[in-house]
Image (cartoon, rainbow, N blue to C red; front, side):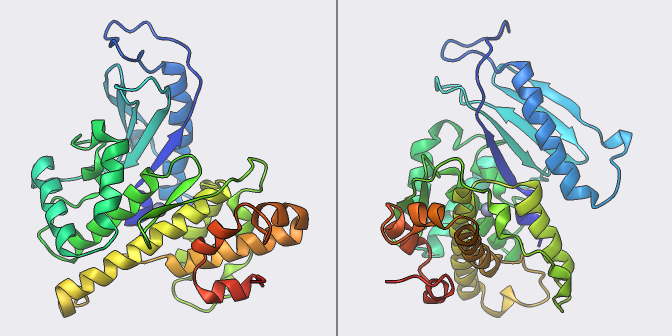
Length: 331
Ligand SMILES: [Zn+2]
């Protein structure tokens, strides 16, 4: 269940302080150490939050620098791999951090990626080709990178079993996050984008938090508490990223459904499936809007109300009639 959330990208944008590295390339200067260390600190906190649940990180689990080049630094902490990098072909000065558990690969990255593309095609998902096309358009330079390219989401050590197909779902879900651009979210329902114009001073997504999950009677409460803490506390982010997660889990649901069709009963037999958080993110999306309306009716009306410029996009986001009913929208 926790595999999906153990694998995510943190994107950070920082200023630029120059660099004196002798390995400097022509197109962009090297990534400055000071900025790398700043992002490293928050990435370390994310790892500690994910693994510790009250435990203390031991000395042997502390961060180790594995390799360093002009545009990339690779660290390891408590079994997680942290890769800081920047697009070497672009003048954009954004440093990105990729965080994941090191993978054991039986297939070379290129073969693994090709197998994934073939199997995704055979799942007949109507959005997948458009999504990958968009990703290749935006990230051509890293498409075939064995460390930070899309292959990192795949379970290359698996045969074509449920775990492999689950990793295809993760692959598509994460690609959809990666193509989010300038307030626009990939919409798998019609291969388009949903664009929202949201001011930076809107409350972060944690206002959607369910305050007391422990009153629920379910054997999954512990997982829910953990998931909520991860998404709405440790990784508290602007509302756009909440809606982006909602769209991500729509993709996950579609990929799971296609896997069931493909593998039949074998997809359910003796297998521990990854959890799908779509219902949870539907709930959080509605709760965010409700909470914003309660706290600041004017901000709600301005950004999501019937006369707002985001209203049509919001309708696309919240297609389920039930969600419209819940937030009491007037059509
Ligand atoms: Zn996600």
